[in-house]
Length: 124
Image 1 (tube, rainbow, N blue to C red):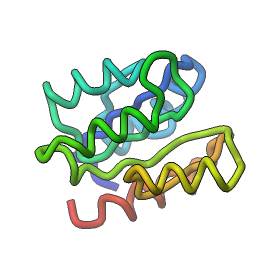
Image 2 (cartoon, rainbow, N blue to C red):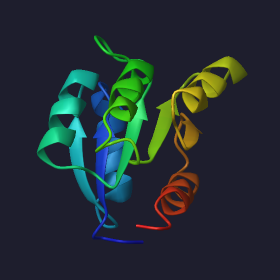
Image 3 (spheres, helix red, strand yellow):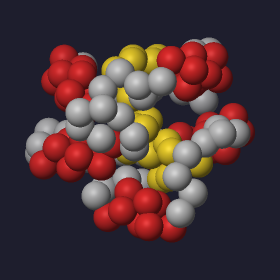
């Protein structure tokens, strides 16, 4: 666990934002964005070490947000873990095809989340 890691949490549902903050606040520095558009602004202000990105959001969805992040040469190496209640293989495959390094299914299991974060940020 690395309290120095900056993680951007992008989700439009207060329940999941609160859950992620509760699970991770003692382990990492967290920043919140409630939309894809807000996430892009937050990344421009302070580049995170990792992004936890929900798929289903109004405006830019998670896939579109990921594509925009990966288009920017300064941001393209930021690891992105998708969070989704979609359990179908197509959603997961699409997440990896747009640049995700992991796919975490909701409901979130704390240990799985921390292991995925540690794996994605191993070289940070």
